[in-house]
Amino acid sequence: MNNLLPKWLAAGLGGLLLVFVALLVVDKSHTLVDAFQDKKPDNTISISAEGKVTATPDLATVNLGVITQGITAADVQSRNNEKINQITAFIKGQGINKEDITTSNFNLYPQRDYRNGQDVIVGYQANQTVSVKVRGIDKSTEQLGKIIDGAANNGANEVTGISLSFDNPDDLKEQAREQAIQKAKEKAGQLANTAGLKLGKVISISETGGGYPTPVYDVATRNAAAGGLAAKTIAPSIEPGSQDIIEQMTVVFEIK
Image 1 (spheres, one colour):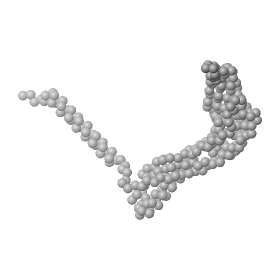
Image 2 (image 1 turned 135 degrees about the vertical axis):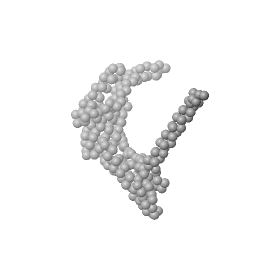
Image 3 (image 1 turned 180 degrees about the vertical axis):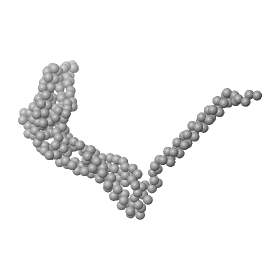
Image 4 (image 1 turned 120 degrees about the vertical axis):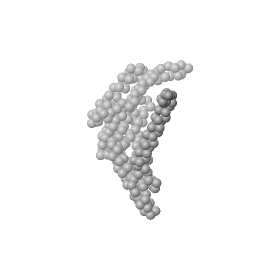
């Protein structure tokens, strides 16, 4: 009598054994995860608070543009580039690093005349914009005023505005976050004390909002004829003032 199991039966039993072992491993894994995983306490309180830091902006970004019109595309582009190079050279001469001077826009397109039912190209217009960062305006805005005034006198005929911000906002944001968390702790402690409870450890901290406004000042308008601003301009008075950096934090505490 052959005591060996049929091959199909042996294969089936082997498959069942593998499934059993796999299920056993998964079960043990879940048991280990449940054993070592920190569980959130049943009794918690969630508190949101706002931190605010007031500071004077130290960075201004101004956009200086040149609009040039002419008959041929080559002539328009050449004259536009000449003015932009002249403006850039002037700005560098005011102590601005080249890393803070960026070409942010360039367009060259035909000007068309649709009269008499015909589409006729009558000329071309080039528009190029340079963004300039001026630092240290919290101490003095004299350099900023000279750049705006000098750029206009060197060919800029479009100034789209000045935005005031911070060179390193991360430090200010961190101060606001710390303030918000401290306020949340104080508020949670007061509520727990009023309810006759004790405040436990912090379970989680999350940032729920924040930021700061970036004011923009219009210091000049675009010349409709693209002929430029006045030959001589008066440097605008720019007052950086102050801005509020606001961060909102939500802190979850254990209560006992």
